[in-house]
Amino acid sequence: LQRNTGGRAPISKSAKSALTFPVARVKRQMYKYLAHGQNSIQVTAAVYLTAVLQYLVGDLVEQAALVADMQNKRRITPRCIFLAIREDSSQLGILLSNVTIDEGGVCAYQHLMLKGSSSMHFIFLAPDLH
Image 1 (cartoon, helix red, strand yellow):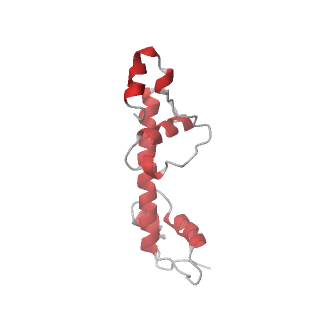
Image 2 (image 1 turned 90 degrees about the vertical axis):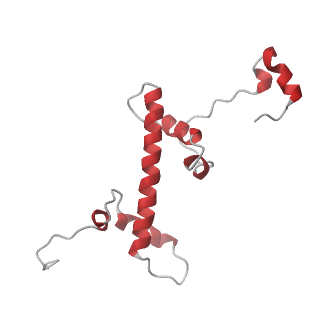
Image 3 (image 1 turned 90 degrees about the horizontal axis):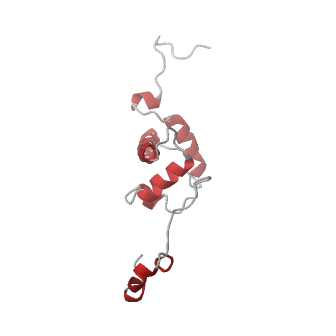
């Protein structure tokens, strides 16, 4: 059996849309979440979702690389990804606010009561500072 008798090699949907992430794989995963009675997904929907995923992952990796650079590390660890998500107050912080990252650790937070006697007068004036 010979595919594509035109003599040209087939071009993937990812290459046509100039994306790094695989459009065909995202479309295949989208089929798992179709509503009952629907049986098709347009290619443009898969390309759009793939582009959004690629943008979000690229932004996350960029932020995690900055965190790793601030800690003088050469590798991006799960801790760097966790801190990048928590420091980003715009997109990723809101989107991934309820996500738990394995080996990510916790955010450092010290309650005002534990900071010492120099900040005790703030506690009684404004108890809800955070």
